[in-house]
Length: 74
Image (cartoon, rainbow, N blue to C red; front, side):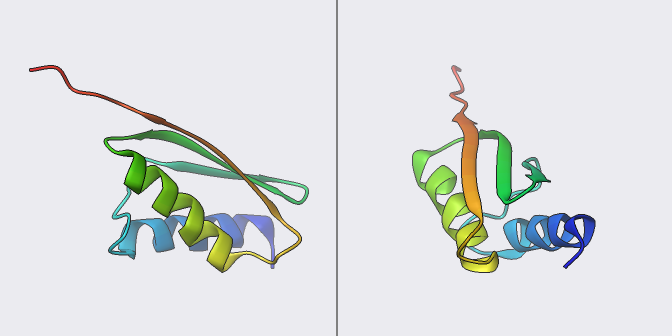
């Protein structure tokens, strides 16, 4: 699959999957690595994003989860 199409597919999965519902995460593919960047509000969502991507890419691709936790102070 062409990397641009794979990136778009992964973004759609992250947005639609009930475990994540993420719109503000970026996905970049370089060689056999998938890089996830952005911020989320919980460690569970961060971990779920990595699982969603791992389920969707071939086993030989490495997923690099650079998503950080953003805390909100009232």
